[in-house]
Length: 221
Image (cartoon, rainbow, N blue to C red; front, side, top):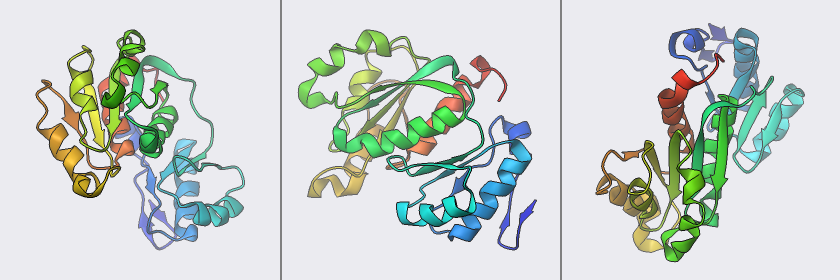
Protein backbone atom coordinates (compact mmCIF):
# COMPACT_ATOMS: atom_id res chain seq x y z
CA UNK A 1 0.00 0.00 0.00
CA UNK A 2 1.67 3.22 -1.14
CA UNK A 3 1.15 6.50 0.72
CA UNK A 4 1.63 9.07 -2.05
CA UNK A 5 5.18 8.54 -3.42
CA UNK A 6 7.23 8.41 -0.24
CA UNK A 7 6.16 5.37 1.82
CA UNK A 8 5.08 1.76 1.40
CA UNK A 9 2.68 0.95 4.22
CA UNK A 10 1.63 -2.38 5.70
CA UNK A 11 -2.16 -2.29 6.27
CA UNK A 12 -2.32 -6.08 6.74
CA UNK A 13 -0.14 -5.96 9.85
CA UNK A 14 -3.19 -5.79 12.14
CA UNK A 15 -4.60 -9.03 10.75
CA UNK A 16 -1.20 -10.69 10.56
CA UNK A 17 0.24 -9.73 13.95
CA UNK A 18 -2.59 -8.33 16.05
CA UNK A 19 -1.41 -4.72 16.00
CA UNK A 20 -1.37 -2.10 13.23
CA UNK A 21 1.64 -0.39 11.72
CA UNK A 22 2.67 2.68 13.74
CA UNK A 23 4.19 5.80 12.18
CA UNK A 24 7.61 6.79 13.53
CA UNK A 25 7.39 10.54 12.98
CA UNK A 26 10.90 11.70 13.80
CA UNK A 27 12.78 12.59 10.63
CA UNK A 28 9.63 12.73 8.49
CA UNK A 29 8.02 15.84 7.09
CA UNK A 30 4.57 16.95 8.21
CA UNK A 31 3.20 15.94 4.80
CA UNK A 32 4.69 12.45 5.02
CA UNK A 33 3.36 11.99 8.56
CA UNK A 34 -0.16 13.18 7.75
CA UNK A 35 -0.29 11.11 4.54
CA UNK A 36 0.76 7.95 6.39
CA UNK A 37 -1.58 8.48 9.33
CA UNK A 38 -4.50 9.18 7.00
CA UNK A 39 -3.84 6.07 4.93
CA UNK A 40 -3.45 3.79 7.97
CA UNK A 41 -6.60 5.21 9.58
CA UNK A 42 -8.49 4.53 6.38
CA UNK A 43 -7.20 0.94 6.29
CA UNK A 44 -7.54 0.09 10.00
CA UNK A 45 -10.10 2.54 11.37
CA UNK A 46 -7.49 4.35 13.44
CA UNK A 47 -3.79 5.22 13.43
CA UNK A 48 -1.00 6.11 15.82
CA UNK A 49 2.30 7.95 15.53
CA UNK A 50 5.27 8.28 17.89
CA UNK A 51 8.12 10.78 18.36
CA UNK A 52 6.24 13.69 16.81
CA UNK A 53 7.96 16.97 17.77
CA UNK A 54 5.61 19.66 19.06
CA UNK A 55 6.56 22.16 16.35
CA UNK A 56 5.80 19.67 13.55
CA UNK A 57 2.59 18.59 15.26
CA UNK A 58 1.07 21.99 14.45
CA UNK A 59 1.22 21.31 10.71
CA UNK A 60 0.12 17.68 11.08
CA UNK A 61 -2.93 18.70 13.11
CA UNK A 62 -3.78 21.31 10.49
CA UNK A 63 -3.86 18.53 7.90
CA UNK A 64 -5.65 16.07 10.24
CA UNK A 65 -8.00 18.14 12.43
CA UNK A 66 -9.61 14.95 13.75
CA UNK A 67 -6.31 13.81 15.26
CA UNK A 68 -5.27 14.24 18.91
CA UNK A 69 -1.70 15.13 19.88
CA UNK A 70 -0.28 14.32 23.31
CA UNK A 71 2.72 16.56 23.96
CA UNK A 72 4.21 14.75 27.02
CA UNK A 73 4.48 11.47 25.11
CA UNK A 74 4.99 13.07 21.66
CA UNK A 75 2.32 10.76 20.21
CA UNK A 76 -0.61 11.38 17.90
CA UNK A 77 -3.90 9.45 17.61
CA UNK A 78 -6.32 9.32 14.72
CA UNK A 79 -9.68 7.62 15.31
CA UNK A 80 -11.20 6.05 18.41
CA UNK A 81 -9.17 4.68 21.30
CA UNK A 82 -10.42 1.19 22.25
CA UNK A 83 -12.00 0.57 25.62
CA UNK A 84 -9.30 -0.73 27.96
CA UNK A 85 -9.60 -4.38 28.96
CA UNK A 86 -7.45 -7.41 29.75
CA UNK A 87 -5.06 -8.01 32.63
CA UNK A 88 -3.51 -4.55 32.63
CA UNK A 89 0.02 -3.17 32.80
CA UNK A 90 1.76 -1.59 35.79
CA UNK A 91 3.98 1.19 34.46
CA UNK A 92 6.62 2.30 36.96
CA UNK A 93 9.18 5.05 36.57
CA UNK A 94 12.06 5.60 38.94
CA UNK A 95 12.11 9.40 38.82
CA UNK A 96 10.04 12.31 37.59
CA UNK A 97 12.64 12.89 34.85
CA UNK A 98 11.77 9.47 33.43
CA UNK A 99 8.11 10.37 32.88
CA UNK A 100 8.39 11.33 29.16
CA UNK A 101 9.60 7.82 28.28
CA UNK A 102 6.92 6.28 30.49
CA UNK A 103 4.33 8.53 28.82
CA UNK A 104 5.24 7.12 25.40
CA UNK A 105 4.71 3.60 26.76
CA UNK A 106 1.39 4.58 28.36
CA UNK A 107 0.07 6.20 25.19
CA UNK A 108 1.04 3.17 23.10
CA UNK A 109 -0.61 0.78 25.55
CA UNK A 110 -3.80 2.85 25.57
CA UNK A 111 -3.89 2.83 21.76
CA UNK A 112 -3.62 -0.98 21.86
CA UNK A 113 -6.46 -1.35 24.36
CA UNK A 114 -4.64 -2.04 27.62
CA UNK A 115 -5.44 -0.80 31.08
CA UNK A 116 -2.46 1.10 32.49
CA UNK A 117 -1.71 1.85 36.15
CA UNK A 118 1.09 4.40 36.52
CA UNK A 119 3.47 4.74 39.46
CA UNK A 120 5.81 7.73 39.32
CA UNK A 121 8.95 8.59 41.27
CA UNK A 122 9.36 5.35 43.24
CA UNK A 123 13.08 4.78 42.63
CA UNK A 124 15.64 3.07 44.81
CA UNK A 125 16.76 6.31 46.50
CA UNK A 126 13.55 6.06 48.54
CA UNK A 127 12.65 2.40 48.30
CA UNK A 128 9.82 2.78 50.82
CA UNK A 129 7.83 4.48 48.04
CA UNK A 130 7.85 1.26 46.03
CA UNK A 131 6.80 -0.82 49.02
CA UNK A 132 3.77 1.45 49.49
CA UNK A 133 2.33 0.43 46.10
CA UNK A 134 3.78 -3.04 45.53
CA UNK A 135 0.52 -4.88 46.27
CA UNK A 136 -1.25 -2.99 43.49
CA UNK A 137 1.66 -3.55 41.12
CA UNK A 138 1.45 -7.31 41.75
CA UNK A 139 -2.07 -7.42 40.26
CA UNK A 140 -0.82 -6.47 36.77
CA UNK A 141 -0.31 -8.91 33.93
CA UNK A 142 2.95 -7.24 32.89
CA UNK A 143 5.17 -4.70 34.67
CA UNK A 144 7.18 -2.08 32.77
CA UNK A 145 9.93 -0.33 34.75
CA UNK A 146 11.47 2.88 33.38
CA UNK A 147 14.68 4.09 35.01
CA UNK A 148 17.79 6.14 34.31
CA UNK A 149 20.88 6.85 36.45
CA UNK A 150 22.28 3.40 37.38
CA UNK A 151 19.10 1.59 36.32
CA UNK A 152 18.67 -0.42 39.52
CA UNK A 153 14.89 -0.31 39.91
CA UNK A 154 13.98 -3.12 37.45
CA UNK A 155 16.16 -5.58 39.38
CA UNK A 156 14.37 -4.68 42.60
CA UNK A 157 10.92 -4.99 41.03
CA UNK A 158 11.96 -8.19 39.26
CA UNK A 159 12.56 -9.81 42.65
CA UNK A 160 9.17 -8.76 44.02
CA UNK A 161 6.61 -9.69 41.36
CA UNK A 162 5.60 -12.83 39.46
CA UNK A 163 4.54 -11.10 36.22
CA UNK A 164 6.93 -10.54 33.30
CA UNK A 165 9.05 -7.42 33.86
CA UNK A 166 10.18 -5.23 30.95
CA UNK A 167 12.95 -2.75 31.75
CA UNK A 168 13.42 0.54 29.90
CA UNK A 169 16.72 2.39 30.43
CA UNK A 170 16.50 6.15 29.98
CA UNK A 171 19.10 8.73 29.06
CA UNK A 172 18.55 10.48 32.40
CA UNK A 173 21.69 10.87 34.51
CA UNK A 174 24.98 12.68 35.00
CA UNK A 175 28.13 12.28 32.90
CA UNK A 176 29.04 8.71 33.77
CA UNK A 177 25.50 7.64 32.91
CA UNK A 178 26.67 8.00 29.29
CA UNK A 179 23.18 9.02 28.08
CA UNK A 180 21.57 5.82 29.29
CA UNK A 181 24.34 3.34 28.53
CA UNK A 182 25.07 2.77 32.23
CA UNK A 183 21.41 1.99 32.92
CA UNK A 184 21.20 -0.27 29.86
CA UNK A 185 24.24 -2.30 30.89
CA UNK A 186 23.02 -2.51 34.48
CA UNK A 187 19.65 -3.86 33.36
CA UNK A 188 21.16 -6.35 30.92
CA UNK A 189 23.36 -7.64 33.76
CA UNK A 190 20.48 -7.85 36.25
CA UNK A 191 20.38 -10.80 38.61
CA UNK A 192 16.55 -10.77 38.49
CA UNK A 193 15.69 -13.89 36.49
CA UNK A 194 13.87 -13.39 33.20
CA UNK A 195 14.10 -9.61 33.06
CA UNK A 196 13.53 -8.28 29.53
CA UNK A 197 15.37 -5.11 28.47
CA UNK A 198 14.56 -2.80 25.55
CA UNK A 199 16.65 -0.02 24.05
CA UNK A 200 17.41 3.34 25.68
CA UNK A 201 14.34 5.64 25.91
CA UNK A 202 12.26 3.07 24.00
CA UNK A 203 8.92 3.33 25.78
CA UNK A 204 7.18 2.32 22.56
CA UNK A 205 9.19 -0.90 22.31
CA UNK A 206 8.39 -1.84 25.90
CA UNK A 207 4.69 -1.28 25.29
CA UNK A 208 4.75 -3.44 22.17
CA UNK A 209 6.53 -6.22 24.05
CA UNK A 210 3.87 -6.04 26.77
CA UNK A 211 1.14 -6.17 24.11
CA UNK A 212 2.60 -9.31 22.58
CA UNK A 213 2.63 -10.95 26.02
CA UNK A 214 -0.90 -9.87 26.95
CA UNK A 215 -2.66 -10.06 23.59
CA UNK A 216 -4.42 -13.39 24.36
CA UNK A 217 -6.14 -11.70 27.33
CA UNK A 218 -7.56 -8.86 25.21
CA UNK A 219 -10.75 -8.55 23.25
CA UNK A 220 -10.01 -8.26 19.50
CA UNK A 221 -8.76 -4.83 18.40
